[in-house]
Length: 304
Ligand code: PMP
Image (cartoon, rainbow, N blue to C red; front, side, top):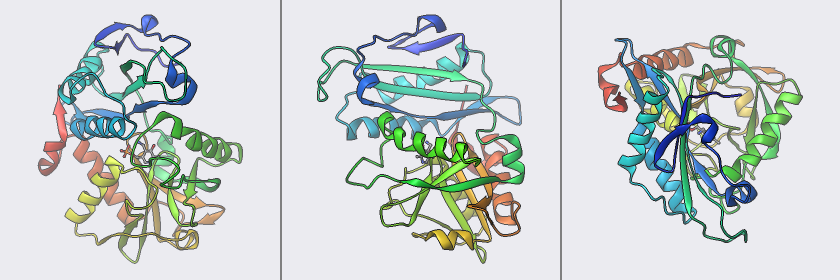
């Protein structure tokens, strides 16, 4: 179980044991919460910083806007709450989880209950394992499909939408794979259960466009910027499952997953079956950026 000293709940830091909600919390019944995953890193100079804090908190507000939820704090207040939570837990690196949700009150599906907000923080290493980060992971195309854009709101990080990710992740794990890859309703590759996806073919980097049912990942955006700065040609275009099997390189990006190479999909070796030159370069630059070692990406860091 995750353990922390303090959790920020509804405007103040409370002891871990006191961060409780009522059993009739609307979000618990219907998944009506919006959340974020944010990482803080210890810089190369020893100073900790949150990576792309503003963009994450802004996305939380965007998700809330999409589900007609009024967050009773400002962007600045929630940024402050994130930093305070890291400090209160004496974390110089770690994972932050802000969540805004409809609390207790009425229990009709469309009830508009008071909005509660929490922020927790804890240490978290490589999401898809240290070994996966170095050697690449094994993934499986899921039998579950990514939600159609008119079924759910793919631009929002809504708690209930993660039932789809949960089913895909559990299926992949039960089949002996590290992660699931979901196709869209047309059969094109969409994204991982909690990550965006990239292929490299003949030196060109490609990822599904934001018109596909994918989350507008902040790590996706970071990688696109890094690739362009490295002079790697980039295309935001759909691709099929077999194109993915034939890729020279394949990798996934996400706040939790960071930049994780994929060495095998559905029993097909990808490229040479190990991380290739493009993913290695992107991964290296990404980790230099989050640790403040790249001057041009310093604007992404909020030191604390
Ligand atoms: N897709 C899904 C479904 C996710 O849950 C995540 C993780 N937030 C991502 C993509 C990657 O987004 P980000 O890089 O902003 O963490």
